[in-house]
Length: 164
Image (cartoon, rainbow, N blue to C red; front, side, top):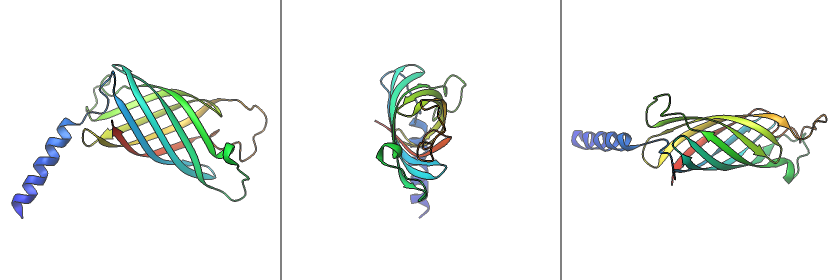
């Protein structure tokens, strides 16, 4: 039993040593997770492609699966897709090589916004991420209906990150 435990700890240690959160050019990250916001929860998918030592471009899409019953939200209200830019700062601020912090900007169907994300990789291919999103400029300047407020408010994403 003790030999199996030592073997498991050794394998995990080697795996963690080789993990890297962002490697720069041609780095591919895919993330899937939950989206939380006022009056709705949903699923979030995102993909980022490294184009420089500390820069990536990507796409992110979210769909609200569970919306408060009082909100009359159609497909267009429940769905959002964004083009995004990230500044991957993990190695710039000398954090653990498995950890990346990435502030960024995004342009979506609903607004122009900003996000702050972080991801930690436990191995070369698997990690966890979280993102905080906020709209900076809403396209609709009128008073928003509850359905129009979806994605036009502070949102949080949390889930699994994968290196491709």
